[in-house]
Image (cartoon, rainbow, N blue to C red; front, side, top):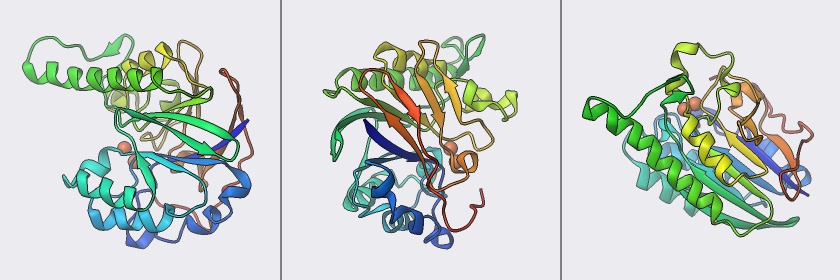
Amino acid sequence: MIRVAAVGDVHLDEDVVGRFRPALERLPDHADALLLAGDLTRHGTAAEARCVAKEFGGLGVPVVAVLGNHDYHCDEVPAVVQVLEGAGITVLEGTGVVVDTVAGPLGVAGAKGFGGGFAGRCASAFGEPEMKAFVHTTQGIADRLAEALAGLAASIRVALTHYAPVPDTLVGEPPEIFPFLGSYLLGQAIDAAPPALAIHGHAHAGTERGTTPGGVRVRNVAHPVIKQAYSVYHLHGGSGTDDGTRSGHERTGHRT
Ligand SMILES: [Fe+2]
Ligand SMILES: [Fe+2]
């Protein structure tokens, strides 16, 4: 059994540094790895990434991240990734990694994801080139996520995205914006090589728990949803998953 902690949408900047760290200092007592589900910064600057590095670096457990749309805003993605990786945080984009935890190997396939919507209410690659490009972007990301998942040589695997793979975890958000919060194509990618758990963020007003059509448990760990420094999920071999203790209380609440 591996204990996986996860949080997303921490939106770090100078004024947020230190908010999560007290709870994170005790992380190894509660979890064997930490997953960060994107929107780690407010506007995606290298300076903000240094705040993330300060807050989430050197925790004593492997830390694996994907970026979110906020982390792309200032077009400094290479610098942001460099800063995070310099702090020992593995950043995935259509790629996978098997990290060695004290409880055994954990496979993580990660991608930011993108929008498009869900069955019956989704964009399709038809008409204008701009619409085709939008859908092809999501399809390409989903394809790479599926490949990364299938390629993980680990009995316990997790899919990590920023955008949502199912609508269940968006409940609470206005239905009109669901197509900008996720895509069924990500859910299909996850079901093609089903992991023990799928983690995402992005939907600040969403719901924590959902399930893919194929039965994979999905958890929206956006900080405004879980309202604590991290949630912990207990993963077993195969597809077994228990939601574990909710032990990551940070010192103060987080403004979204
Ligand atoms: Fe966010
Ligand atoms: Fe986001």
